[in-house]
Amino acid sequence: MTNPQTAPRHDTLDNAGRRNLLRLGSGATLASLLAPGALWASGIEAANAGRQISYLSGFYKPTQVESTSLGLKVRGNIPAELSGRYFRNGHNPKAGAKPAFWFAGDGMVFGVRIRNGKAEWYRNRWVDTPALHGAPLFRPDRSIDFAASAAATSIVAHAGRILALQEVNFPYEMTPELETVGAYTFGGALKSNMTAHPKIDPQTGEMLFFGASPVPPHLVFHQVDRHGQLAHSEIIEGAGPSVMHDFMITKNYVIFFDTSVTFNPRASLPFPYAWNPKYQAKIGLLPRDRSKGPVRWIPMDPFYTFHQSNAWEDASGRIVVQGTQWDQAAWEHTSMWINSVAGHGQWPGKGMHMAQWTIDPVQATASVKVVDDLSTDFPTINAALLTSASRYTYAVAFPNTKLKQPALVKYDSRTGQRQVREFPSGQMPSEPNFAAAAGATGEDNGWILSLVSDLASQRGHLLILDAHDIRKPPVAVIDIPDWVSAGVHGAWISDKELAPS
Image 1 (cartoon, rainbow, N blue to C red):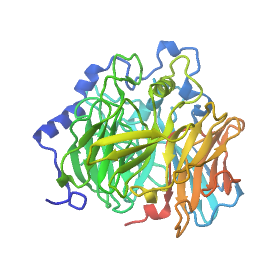
Image 2 (cartoon, rainbow, N blue to C red):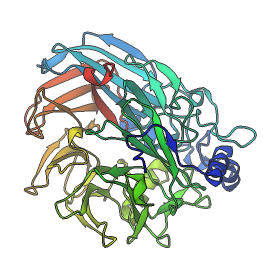
Image 3 (cartoon, rainbow, N blue to C red):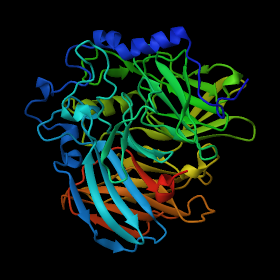
Image 4 (cartoon, rainbow, N blue to C red):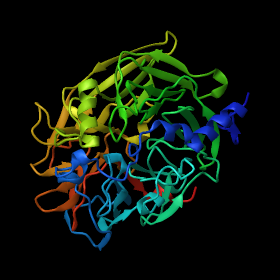
């Protein structure tokens, strides 16, 4: 049988699968389950009237203008070999818009162009989608408009294209100058939603991703070849209506996390997902070589994970996955913040910790251990190590009993040590993104880039840190002459990634 990793387009959807995808696209089942004004509602519930909204205030106060600044001020020296663009996406509602929950806010991408040791420009642009102009997710006939996206979660580059992503919808293509091209469907081959966390295999150049839904089909898996062609699509059986936000890959497996946070339209929440200890949480192992059989689901005790940083197969064939884990209390704190429920805290995360899963694909067993006591999320690595054993993970830490202010953290899985760079009061770093030095041979030979929101100055700055030791004074600080709202995921996109293949 031909291996779909190298084959031309091979769509394994049978007639029943096609009908299920059409059912998903119709949206009728989902629309009928949702109470009026729940998912993607256009206004804050009456309970929010007259009080501060978590995701519209403080560090998350939206930026209200699109701007362009040239020749940015730099403190320190930008490494001359850094040539590319730093982009960071996030929810940034237009003036007057009051999304019912954080994830419904309009997408805005903030970007800095770096070349020849200079910060040539700063731009921030809304992703120009129908949703930005008020289009709802559901059309009048209750079908889903996958193009009506906030496109506000992440941004990636693959096969020369830049895509802004949000997992309920189609991706949106952006230019290197942050103008919106439009919804991107891989030449019409993509029929439903795409995760905000695709994985690009550094060895094969493939981009693997999934689409998840609270109604069947709950999980659809896709493979895109290194040239950007959608080569394989397949419904994965056995998944349920959980918040499946991220996933992982190794050289031989795709790893799905079907967790204890599930769709519940009766939860009285604008984002209608709640902790469900009765739901059987599980981890799915899917062979990347699709001739080697279906997914295998491994039951787990209740847990949730938003993000994973890496996965690989060790010498004994076991799979190691690194990421962050939530228990019920941690999820409920995050849910209160996402929905701006009365009593929510200042920070979107509390009580989630770096963890490591060990999975035995032969015995079909899995275990997890928490490896740190800080409240961390947005874990990242040197992307060249994806699917290979990695030593270093970088993350954002939120204040808890161990930490007074937000911080960036570097973890060393070999020694168990960590570096912590705590920020001054009134500053919030974004997800740390790694940029490799030219000809790098060491895993941490490069720089960490993080966009910082500064409440005192009402401006932002792009921080460039030596990845060897993030506690040292910055290599460079690029001043941004505008307010930069805190956001979600970013990316360093080198010029080489956008060069024609």
